Structure formats: C-alpha cells, structure tokens
Image (cartoon, rainbow, N blue to C red):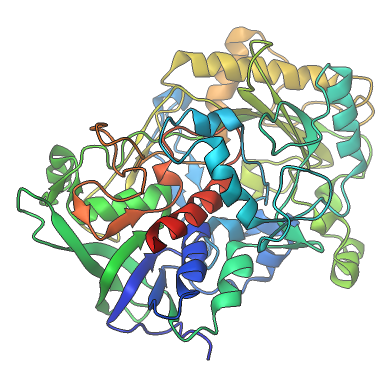
Length: 534
C-alpha cells in the first residue's frame, strides 16, 4: 500500500530528515532492500501545486508554503541589504521550485576536494546512475531515474544569444557536463515532455508502495536525540524529535542511522539545536553544548549573481507566457513559453582568459526582476553573471534554542575583494554580448534595476545594490580528511565523533563547484546510499 504521510512508526532502521534530492534518493535506494525499515520526514507538505509541474512558473512558488522563505543577515558588502533565499519546503525540496538546470561543474571541482573516493573519475558513475539523457551529450548516464532533456520550445532570442557568444569568441560547448564546461550551450533541464521532473518524481514516487517506506509530511525535525553525548568519547545519535503537522512533539528512534538531508541551511541548524557545534556559538544562542564540532555552520559559500536587464523591441519574450494562447498550448501539448525553464542558455568563461571558468553567463528571454516575483514592465531580456569560485565565506548559526526561530544566515558576500573584481569583469562581458550584431535586434534600452554601462565606481556600487543569490549555498557541514579539524563529516559522510549520524546534502561540499549544485547533491546521495549499504 502507499506510504502513510500522516503518521510515523516509533522506530525505523533509517530515519531520513528532509525530502529534497538527497532524501528522496536515500529513501528510494535504502528501501529497495526489504529488510530496511525507512522513514522519511519532510517539514513541508505534499508537492501538489500546479506551478511545480509548469517549468516557467517556478518563481510563483517563492515566498509561499512551498518555500522556507529565508532572509540573510544584513550584508556589509552589499550595502547592508538582506537577501531573500528561497529553499524548497515540500516533497522534492528545492528540485520542486528551481529552474531545473542540470550542470555538474568541472572535473577539477571534484578532484580539487582532494578526498579519497571523491575524485571526478570516482564520482562519475554516480552522476551517470542518476541520469536518463534524452538528446545530445556523451557524458551522461542513459537509464537513470531522472530525465535530462533539451527545452522543447526555446525562445528565438536564445539562439541569438548563443550566436552572440560565438561572435564574442566564446566557443560552442557540445558536452556541457563533461570534464570541462568552458563555452556556451543551451541549458540541459530536468524535464520530461515539457514538465518538471523533481526528485520526488524521479525517486520517491516509484518507491511509495513499498511497505518498508513511510513518508511523513508536515514533520519538522527540531533536534537529534544523542545518547552519552557528554562523555569524552562522544555519543550516539539514537533518533530525532520532531513537530508533527498537528503541533504535537514526537520521538522517532533510528536503530541504525539518522541521515540528515535538510540542506546547507537546515542541516547545520538542526545540529546546533542539538548541541553539536562550536561551544561558544552555542552558548551565545542559549544552547548547552553536547558535542564540540567547531566546523558546524562554518564555511558557507554561495554563487552571487549580478545582471544586465534590457528592454526588447520585439514582443516575443516570456512576458507573454501567461497569455491565454500560451496556456492553451502548454496544457494541450506541453510546449510553448510555459515549458521554458527561464534560464535557457549558459556560457562558462574565464576572467583571466585562460584556465577553467570562474564566471557563468546565464541568458533569460525575460526581465528576471526580484527573483521573478516582480512583473516586468514590458518585454525584455536578462543576461545574468555568476561568480563561480567565490573567495568569500560565511556562516549559518542558530539564533536561539527555539527551533521555530530561523537561523542567522551570514554569507559574507564580497568580503573577499577579488570577488567584486571578477563580477565586474563578468558584467562588462554581458554588456559586450548585448552589443553584438547577433543580439542587437533584441537588446534595447536598459531596464531597472540595470542602469546601463557605468564607470568602475558606478558598476561596483550597482553590484553592491542589486546582486542576488543564485540559490546555491554549500559547505556548512563540510567533508574533510581525518586530520582536518574543521571538517564536520569524514569521506564516508559520518559526523565526526558521533555514531549513527551522517549528513548527505550540499552542506558537505568542501568547495563550491563551477556549475550548479543540484547535480552534485544527487551524486552525493547516490554515493552515500552505497556507503551506507556496505
């Protein structure tokens, strides 16, 4: 029978916290063994919103019940602004509310982690295990559960952007998810026949009828249960305490392991609420330390994005996506503007002119303003610029011992001055692309918040006032070698000094990748499932 989503048993072999991509992968892979009793806890509700299925509608889910709706602390490097950080709060996690871009990064990203078992050659089989590629590309898996496809109805302006890249000397990249992603390419997307494919679609639904898998929605994990945590030898995580949808507090025992898959914000927060982290920070938040692990919540990295927004003199952009004709085309054939992921093409380039890319250029045939939550004033386009290898670091810290109080998110944007230099270089390249012969027919006057080309001082100020997250936080429970005192988990993803607990999500990434973070999270979870089952 289908898994019960309203109540959980009192114990299971594996308790999985969070139904994002990692949690869905683990729920599927671990429950494939009939002897494993698996419970998956998700704080949000079921993924029922129509907008989840419609690729172009993802921003309509921001700041709703499907989103954690986080805000950062005021950022000194960004003029004191607090940035909006959407994070998925439903089955599928952020794969249910994102732009569906499947971009692994470069081989050097994983080789650079310098950890046994995590080189690109060693993780490639796990990427392939996820993927079912429809369309060109030799680097992909062929029979995995997650469809990777081309957009069915890309905008004609997207072809012009790719031509502009070639005109500017950026080569075509026919194999975007190979060892080096330098060049320009249409965006591969996690879609099938014009509809989003989330982690819940690919991994969770096929497993729901297994009697040994229970999925509980509306279950917010507040703390880990730790036995003997105050002894010098560390302790064992025996389960979790969570708030059910009806407001009651319940306990769930894990006979084997708790698998923390709550993401780069919530995984360190849950650890800290449980007394695991830097003792001084914990005491400052009114939390009694149970297990000293200073790296919890440290090492936060994110991709910061600036952009060039221009009006378009031709009324053919995604501004018309919600017209009656567009909606009819989508409902009847799953084609047209609503099948767009918005970010239809990318280019990866190096600010130094050589070596691996440190800037991503993203093209959207629409003015993408305030995370897509502000209706555009007219037809237009966006050329986004992404800082791929930030030197800046930040933290996630519990604000208090109250689990309902959001953590303090302090990304430290632009605290490394080199980051601003690279972003400025990227914006100059975006402006150059807008002036090419290929894009000129579609690139009109500047549209707010972009004010047009400026001198260095003006451009720096514009970036500080208008740059935003690209939604890729990582590193807050980072993985490291046994002698790495700042590491939170070992190369087997086990939390240092605690038995019965692993972290499996973007927070374990030691260094952010030169791509997007969805693909590596799936990979990490596939590898984790194998490590756990050994």
